[in-house]
Image 1 (tube, rainbow, N blue to C red):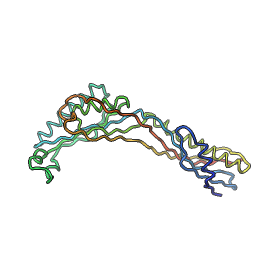
Image 2: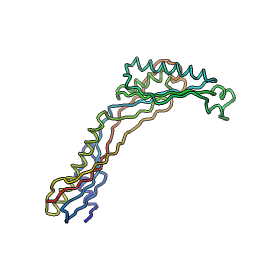
Image 3: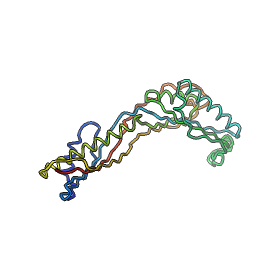
Length: 250
């Protein structure tokens, strides 16, 4: 007998109310021959982000390759110096990309000949900086002040991913057991041992993307930090676990 009915959904919703847990779906299958109840249910666990991975970088143009490289070297050193003054650990900084070469803007017919000539070559470089939610706004301000004019995207996460994943799975399994116990009671029996369980976890990780900072927003040659800083708050990080469990009926 396969059951998926409004009554089961209602029971599950009542059992899962409260906290960060939220039931999304339940499936119940009862086998009288094998004396088992199979449950599939989904639960969420949430925790405030305690890690902020900031993306910083620059993008500059010049009329010749040497000029583009010179600007790139100056900005690269300025940004590195700004991070060093903040005592950002070396292993918290990772290179993402870097390149120099002829710019596509050189062929852009919407630009004047003078603008195209000024943009014949380009250089770009980017990094990620892993820091705390309390420090990320300051790191961003200092980097932009040093010339990081393509900065601002932030990936939020938790340091202990495993425990958050385990919490979501444990909630889903406990909820599945509660539903199975209700079903067994309705059959005039009681729930027995857990015979099988599988767990699928989905990460729901927010990312904040800020607008590109153009020239005049500290995006030149290391003009110092920006003031005031952006007001950034760490979001909640969610893990959604779907557990399929089979319980014996006694």
